[in-house]
Length: 168
Image 1 (cartoon, helix red, strand yellow):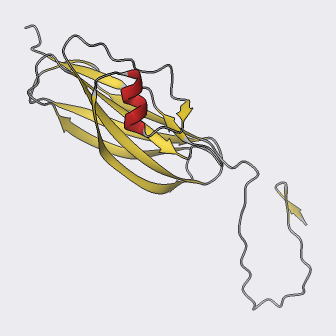
Image 2 (cartoon, rainbow, N blue to C red):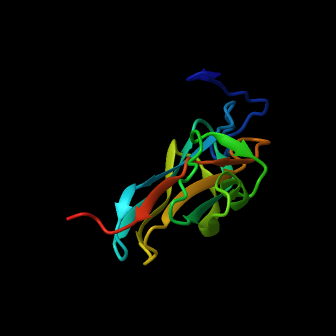
């Protein structure tokens, strides 16, 4: 019998009191895209910035590891934020982000593993306190692995702020 385009087949006769279990499998296995939202621009030491990291899913259930990384760049060094939210590679997230930002200090600040079913899942929503490092640029990125069946890491575009005194 067909219902909403899904075909159900019965090969055995089951009485009404027998529980029946079904598992849904999707023909679209899903593909994950990480993104970070952060107040960019100039931020003073001691202030807080809102960090939101999300994973978008274009299809079915995908279980993946995720990692939020923080890069700190020396004064005068402009960050290479990456082209978009779809760059993929086998490199560890810090190795990838340091590779496009030579000399940056990179640390994993949050991470986990979970199943992504919804079209958009927020993995981090936090207030980050700005360190007392005048002139430095701080960037955050999110990576997921695997981003699709048989895939590797996929990295978000970096979002950055510079630590400085704001003009009054």
